[in-house]
Image (tube, rainbow, N blue to C red; front, side, top):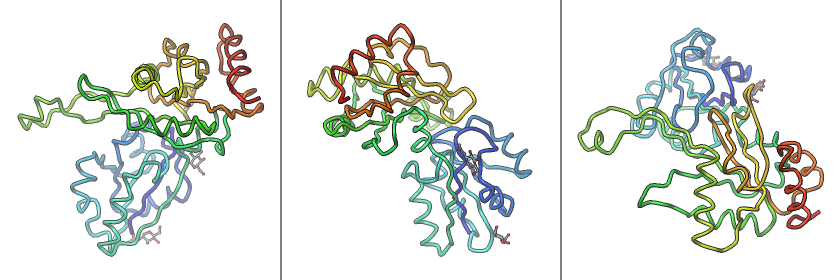
Length: 285
Ligand SMILES: *[C@@H]1O[C@H](CO)[C@@H](O)[C@H](O)[C@H]1NC(C)=O
Ligand SMILES: CC(=O)N[C@H]1CO[C@H](CO)[C@@H](O)[C@@H]1O
């Protein structure tokens, strides 16, 4: 059996009882370590499970999935995913490959950002399409996400923006020389994301959003230091959100009064006036 187990968002104790039982009954345990990060390290997990955990990077999951699946027809293998197994589509490949090999697959869910984001005060029912923001390079500034934000905004829905992380990336030089030397992990901040989004709005000018659009920086969700700061996109540009992981919500025009009351709590005192004004002016009340 291949168990694909969601670990929740914060630490080793977020796993469900079912998930823990599967881990305990597994011969090998892999931890997926590239689409997100857990706020604890592998050693902490090993201590808690009383078993070794192998960190599976992108290379391993994508090109050596047979190593992970080896003999899983006969023994249990656990594949641990931060958040919920299907938060990102990346793991469908592994599941399909397992089925091809005649391995039974069982999914054990846990919280992911897609539901934990509800803690920001906006109703999950009022979110539209989620987008991912990647780091712009000098000559590569992709904006394929923009129409999706616009569609959400046009019908008044909120947009969850997931921010890029770079784990075990090689520099171009090291890659060219085939040296397996990896850069330290990097996590995109809300600030960088806002800068990039405003740059694209400026360039395309289709008015999907703008500096005065209301947004919420949501950081370290599900952990003890979780924090929300709401304001205009412009105001949030200069806000210091601290440690990773960061995500962002662009608030939709149909923000309900009850949602508004919750979100207003995240607005720093000095910005409340602007927040209320823009809400009355641009949002349906
Ligand atoms: C696999 O896990 C199941 C359920 O946790 C357990 O009943 C079974 O004994 C395990 N199989 C092996 C080969 O350890
Ligand atoms: C992050 C999160 O909510 N994780 C949950 C995973 O499941 C366990 C057990 O059901 C919960 O206690 C955690 O809160």
